[in-house]
Length: 344
Image (tube, rainbow, N blue to C red; front, side):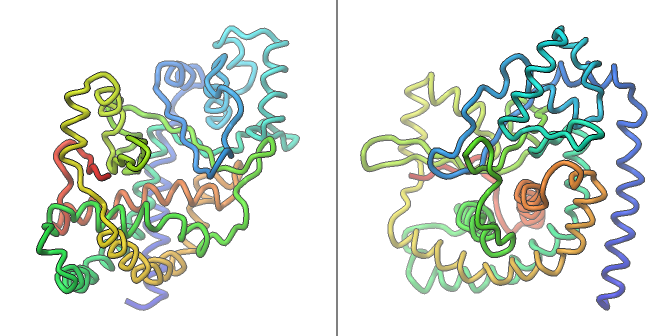
């Protein structure tokens, strides 16, 4: 397929998705949208380093829902009535969020400055990401024989089964935990993350219709300190329920810890090496689709609220999750029963 035909195909896909996705919310009244916002669950996520974190309660007095409502183009006064705020509270909360760098006023309307995605929008973002996710999955498929050969060459196969670790290797190592900071540094090329109240971080508010799992089934990492020398890590999309059990069930906690993969120096070095080997290929795909990504950014309306870098770093989570699911469907990796992989 020629480059011109590829771009034509991408444009047709995008046009179809925009036509299909743009009608769902347009059929709902602002009152129906508000009812949905107040009865939905939302998860707040931050990408940061060190103490670069929000210094306020993002859920206090429903200010998070206020941001979602503004994202949905609901008038502030309509939200005030639904939330039971007074005019003074509306003014106070609006100014508070502006001061914290979570809200702006362009002279036409108030706009959130963090990544917000509702259930319908999340589904659309997955659809928009199909061309990239397929390209990423196909490129990883080509890498698997070489990765397995290196796995055998350094005799890791004497101690470990590649297939049992395939989810960690092909998803977490090649696309997420060992890679996402490289994507940020080498693809987005921003020296600093967005500055908010003197801190630098990316922030998101995502609707979560499947309460036990991560919003939209996105895979991600979580770390917890076990003792002075050991950290426990969970990679997957079923961390919410597991976290509750880990806190409240010592027997379950011990069983998870005992069964978790021990990340030895030789394993870490192998992971690090294959992530570095794959990095240029991943970056090439992202760069090839840059025009398409910017078009998605503009056509979804996110360009009216946030910078491309903030949009893309969160959309990338949808992309690598989708690529992971494609690889699983085609039998190249096995997602653990329960959705999580544990290592220490």
